[in-house]
Each structure stands twice: as C-alpha cells, then as structure tokens.
Image (cartoon, rainbow over all chains, first blue to last red; front, side, top):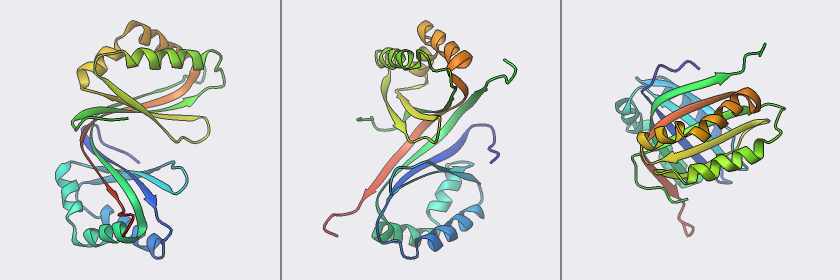
Length: 109
Length: 109
C-alpha cells in the first residue's frame, strides 16, 4: 500500500469480537468496499491481534474525509450493528502522522 | 497505563530482530529505564507481533520531549547498536493523537 508523504490521518481500531458473528463477515466486506469509494480514503492494514481481538489501521487524507465516512448513513447503520451485536468493546485512536522513517540493513554489510 | 487527554505523541515502532541478539535484552532494559526518566515520557505498550517482529508504541507529552530522547547520548549509542547488530530493519511512525474514544458493551444489555 502506497501512502503519501505525511501529514495524513491514521485511525487505529482495536475491537473485541463477540460470539454473535452471524453476518459479520458480509457486513465487514461491504463496509470495506464502501469506504474504499469515499473521497480521501488512502488504504488499510490489518495488524496482528490476540485471541478474539481485531486490529486495523485505516488511512485518510485528512480529518474532513474521515468525518465524511463517519457520517455516511450506511456506515452509521453498520456501526450500530457493531455495538449491538458484533463487538463487546472497541477502542479508536485518531492520529495525525507527523513523520515516518525506516532502516533496512545493507544486505552486503 | 494512564494517558492524558489528547493531544499527545504516540510513536509506533515495528522492528525485525536479527539473529545476533547477544546483549540485546540488557541494552533494551537499560533504554526502557532511561527513557522512563526523561521529561515528557508518558508510557509504552507492547503490541502483538508476528515471528521475529517486535511492535511497541511509546508515548510522549510533545514533539520536544521526543526530540530530547532521540538526541540523548546513551540512546544514540544504543540506536547505533540496533542498526549494526540487533535489527535487520525497523519502521518508525511519529503520530500526534488527535482524539480517542471507545465502547464497552453494557454487561446487563
């Protein structure tokens, strides 16, 4: 996934799944597809989780595009289903990426 | 770990460990202890990783306190050891936490 130069928005979501997951995968796939069509959507990444924990990071151009998604009517219905059935808890952290850098060992070094 | 209200800084670090880890745990423990003594340090969290991947989030009051830590002479020596011996690669993302919220299912619901 190619991300632009910072700044951009990274939303870190950690969810604990309930044991009532009938229809969850379909709804989740729908929401992934719908989010990909939204202006300002940049991508998503799954992170390792433990047990029935799901971790994902979703990237947006700016806070305005994230707000548009949060207020999308179909997404609002899905979020309600999440709170009522699919998740026992979740935590959402909205961050602004200030800078990024990395290191790769020289293979000849 | 009690974090303050946003804004604060969250530094996401993903490292791939090499197979030359002699002395790594000791150096890592020293750096954790030293970082905890720095002004503006707020805490750290390990995240699940896969294989020889290490994931950690370190929290700072602001970019100035993070900069102080980055320039700390003992930390600079440790970072060099990391690049020369202990890590084959790492990725660092410096983020500013804009807001956080969560949901807990009502146990009686």
